[in-house]
Length: 128
Length: 128
Image 1: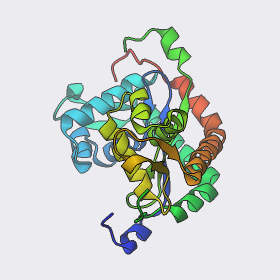
Image 2: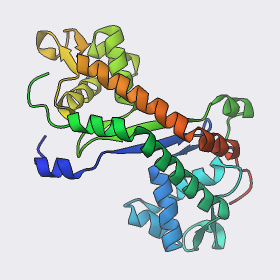
Image 3: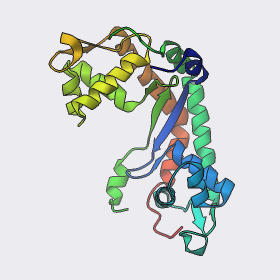
């Protein structure tokens, strides 16, 4: 690998969770970040833009969230397509909190193993 | 969504871990499954094939694993390209075990939250 040791050492090891909650309901860091950005910006398009995502992609992710749970996660004004504002529902806020709690619980549960694995990660210059 | 209730209910909720161990060393369920298949088949191409993956894709994943740690994960015979056998190193076996332990620990840590979220997952027929 081409990165210098300093760059490698600066990247803290971490665990990322993807939740599979049903045959079609999945929740990972990307959707959670999009929800946080919608809360921050009040707009699906601005939230998507802040993540380098097209409006269409952001809208499809919001739509999949809204259909992935028995309650809506994001509400939109003016018909919900371009132009209107967007905000999280109380359930959307709850979803972020629950994901964050699970992330923290998992981090604590695997911290020792993760640190041990990170110590043996790095470039293996020898041939396998 | 078009899936019937029975299909949705049969999909058990689960958490999937992706480990980020350094700036370029990542480990998730796909690579772990590939290692398990290499152990089972003694071949990178057969392992890839069992996962619907091209030989090239499987080889690149193995290469990234071998370079992602200070020790080799998979060894190959006859130069390591097409035709030769492949097997896990002791470190490769350890990697699978460590990932499985982390998976189990994380599952236990988030079980309550995961079950609660899965109960509210499902099709929201109303408009958001």
